[in-house]
Length: 178
Image (spheres, rainbow, N blue to C red):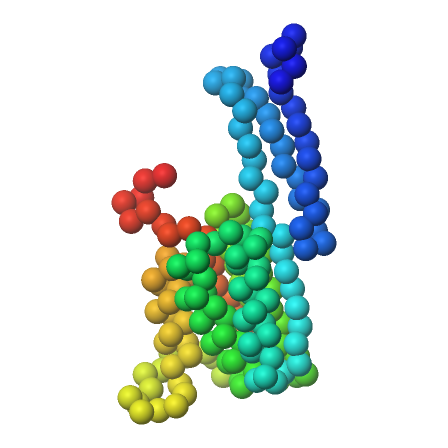
């Protein structure tokens, strides 16, 4: 802060994952104290061959992004990774085309969006209740349960090429307080 004017102004550029983001510090008119605009996490996008062996690779990329870029609490990361694994697996098994896309970004501070894209499928995603000893069929059921527990929501695009989920980085306050 410059002592003669009473104003503070600092602009710093940060390069994360190849994307430039800016943090600004400004003085509020009313309180006269600095307010920091928190930068959004840098987005990440990858495409992998449509093959089940790449599910773990996407999961590791997602884990690194959540931990290192988003600073998501460790207790929330594993449930998000289960969701990523299930959605990528569904894209591998039920999509078409040569690749599956994974994209994570922040539509606003405190919220992440994960998108898993594959080529169009004719079947609308549907929650199933698998038999107790069935080896598959629980993917969307697990996805729905984990996303609800995390305070998020999920869906898919009309053309059924992309499944998305929005998840808060921090646990939402159950009492609705800031």
